[in-house]
Structures are given as structure tokens and as C-alpha cells.
Length: 185
Image (cartoon, rainbow, N blue to C red; front, side):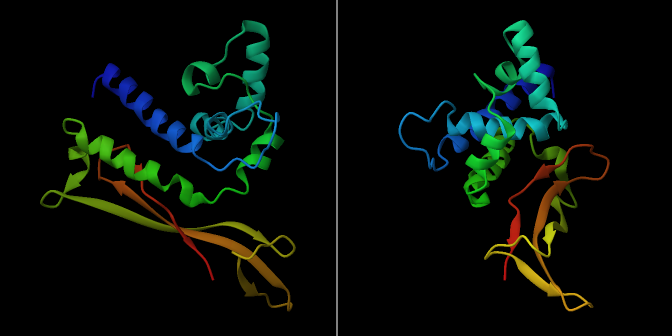
């Protein structure tokens, strides 16, 4: 896949994500809407995309010095919200709101010339790797969606878990995540 094709695909996939994030419910009322829900969501996504917990802080500093940042050029974020604001806006959102992005990603790859062919094995089938993971555990913090387990000392642990499915192929260094399935009581 050529460089320009990769850039167009990335732009298209980020555009799909941004479009989905723009539709997230917004609890704010009145003039307290400095950042769109799309900007808030893309700011959160940028940290994972760039794999750097200090990415947003660095981008704010970069923006002060150079009047532009990678957040603007890569993710279309005009102004960078604070970490606390991102959490306050996105924590109430259900993860299911992102499910259309997973389907759109696979569909965009399917439409590309040979897009999913690199994942086909065993008579043209795609392989899916499954992995279960726990991503929250606490004896104090919990919600109505938490699973529970009793510990040997009589205490209760509250946790969240999910089953993650990913398109994979032996010898191929890229993977395509599919919709996660959250495990709930």
C-alpha cells in the first residue's frame, strides 16, 4: 500500500471517528461549549494514537510557541481541552456509541483494492483472535455495570471486563480491532 493511499485511508478513518464523536450526547447547556464533543473525543483518542500520556500537555506547549500543533494538523482539534474536561465529558458516554466506527473501518478496508486480502488465510477466510481482559478493579469504586467477586478475606472486588476480537493474519504486522463485547452481570 503506497504512502498516499495510507494517508488518505488514515484521513478517512479519522474522519469517521470524528463524525461519530460529534454525535455523542452533550450534557452542557448555555455558553459552556468551548470544545465540541468531536474535539473532546479526538483529544482523548490522540493520546492513545500517539501512545504518549503526556502528548496533550506537550501539544499545548508546542501550540504556545509555534501557534500550531499536531493535534490541529492530525486530529483537527482547534483548541486542546484539559484532561479533566475530557474525562468529565466522556465518562458518562456509553462505549456502544463508538460501535459504528468499528464497522465503518472494516467497510472502508473492504472497499479498498485488496484491503482485507492481506488478512485472508485458510481458503479466503479471515482469522479472528479473541482475548478477554479486565480493565478496572476496585474494592471501593463501583457502578451498576460492575461484575463482582468475593475475596478470601471476605471483601468484595468490583471490576469491569471485556472480550476483544481482532482481525489478524500470520506474518502480517497489522491488526484490525473489532467491536468489543463488554461483560456485564
